Image 1 (tube, rainbow, N blue to C red):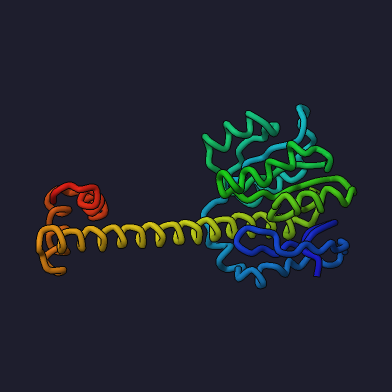
Image 2: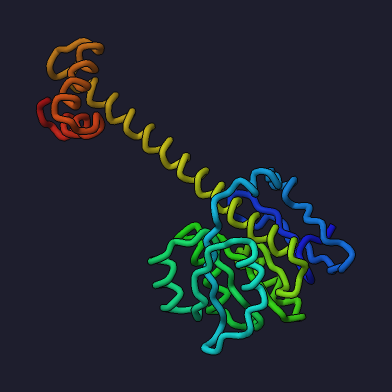
Length: 240
C-alpha cells in the first residue's frame, strides 16, 4: 500500500535503507501502513513531545513552502527555513531539531543530496524530503542518500503528518539504541580495566581478589572519582 504521495516506501534497519520500493500514488489511498511494520503505533506517536522541524531548501531562492502551514497545524516548532550550506549547519548546531525538512526538486544537486547522509552521520538527524517534482530521480536519489521519507508537498495532510512523526520517532529510537550500545561498550571496557587492576594488586601487593576489589572501590569512593579512573591509575603503575 502506498504511504507517501508520488513516491517511495522505505524500510529501515539501524538507520540503513534496507529496501526501497517505488509505488504509485493513489488519491483514494491515504492510509499510512509503515507505522506497524516499523513497530510504531499511532498512540506512541501521539504521545510525543512537540516535534522541532528544521526547514531547508536548495539554492538561494526559497521556493513556496506549501508544507509549512501543515506543520504549523500539527503544532510543530518550526525552525528556518534556510538554504542548504553554512546557514543550515549553523541552524542545526544552534537549535538541535528532531527532524530536517529538506525541499528538493533537482535530483542532480549532489551537494544537497549529501546533506541527507551528512546530518544523519554527524547528528543522527532524520531527514524528510519534500518535493513538487515529478522526476522519479528525486525520490530514488533521496532514498539512496538516506532520507527517512519522501513526500510531495501536495500530499494529503495525514500522509505528511505520519511521515514527519515516523521520521522523528524512528530517528529518536535509533539514536537511543546507538547510545545504549555505546554505554554498554563503555561499561564493558570499564569492567575490563577493573579486572586488570585487581589482578595487578593481587600479584604486586599480595592482596586477595576480594581485598583488591574492595580497595579499588574504597579509593574511588574516598577520592570521588570513577572506579575506572582508579583502575587505570593502577594499570599505569601507580598506587591506590
